[in-house]
Image (cartoon, rainbow, N blue to C red; front, side, top):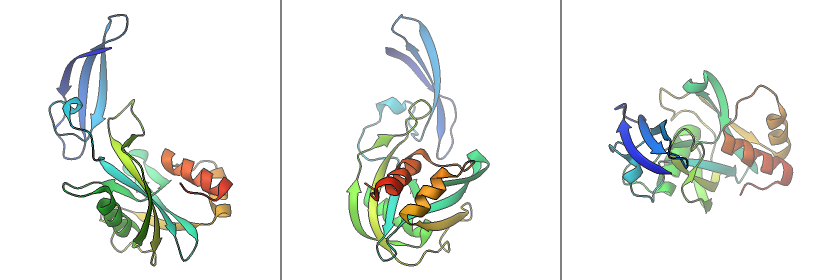
Length: 192
């Protein structure tokens, strides 16, 4: 496989489309369109290292429950169950972004970092976006007081039994990472 040309199609603030031309193994010229958070003319040239975004997997220490959110997602035209998440701002570490996002979306505070993943890709057929999973213990009282006006979020705290019931309901929409963690939590009582 060889990439021969890349072109930036859009110029938006948080997400852009790129058209890429490449040769497959049979030397056929193919085209692909993908989304990227990069503002560079060629996102394939960007340095690796820090993730575009963070997904926080919070376990509430006092309540002994896994914290998830039910959030309206415009691209889905409805609500999705997932974990607090957001873009990493320039100059921020993954942990700093995770602390900020958890507080903004749930009102909760990180008290202990349990595990941090390297940058990982969740939908590489559509985007080069990478995220880091930040597994934490948290404390505080859930609140949506700090949500942005573009966010509609309900904070849920789940026992193992409640997590199992939730993922068994048909018709609900789940973020793939969240469904996997909820499933592990429901089956084995572990989050990482």
